[in-house]
Length: 118
Image 1 (spheres, rainbow, N blue to C red):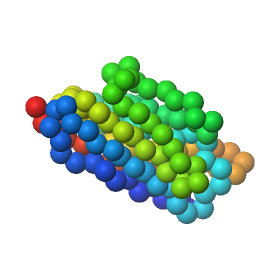
Image 2: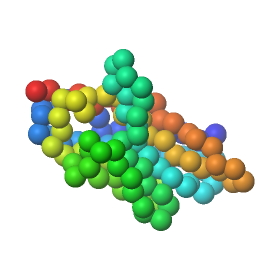
Image 3: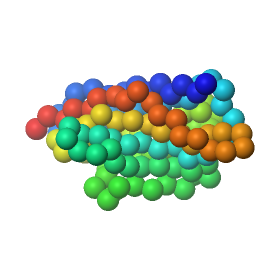
Image 4: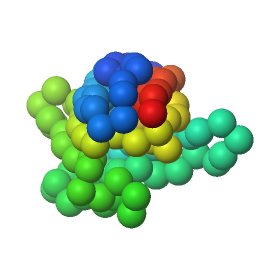
């Protein structure tokens, strides 16, 4: 059983910053990729950023230069620093990890709301 607990969401004005955290706990073997996704009302869930165990990162085009993903392997935690937030960044943000002993499985957090006011 793997649990992901997210924190750091909230309400912020446009141009502001938030930092999301997601800590994995439970029956964790090696964690491969860790990432953040978001889902706005009426839209499909989309990748925001991910990071592999070696630190290689991938970002969605519309967050490049504004968001930074990082991870602390010792703490099984992934972070998302979000700067210069825009109203269109408003969504529920979910973290996801790939972990497993022989096969990699996807585990999702419960989601945290980020609301950016104009």
